[in-house]
Image (cartoon, rainbow, N blue to C red; front, side, top):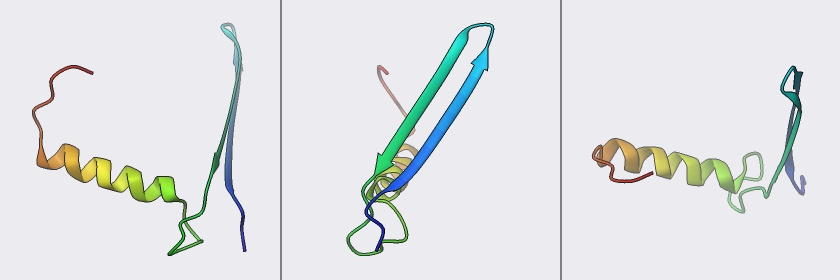
Length: 56
């Protein structure tokens, strides 16, 4: 059983270097995906349902 889903992004350019690492906890009901994926899907559905946005 996976303990974490890990994603890394590395970029280098004239701006300097960027390194980002995200470690997500697997979903309790479906360990093949992360809990964050479920939260992202819910947030997307909310944005579609409520298209008017005030602030950031």
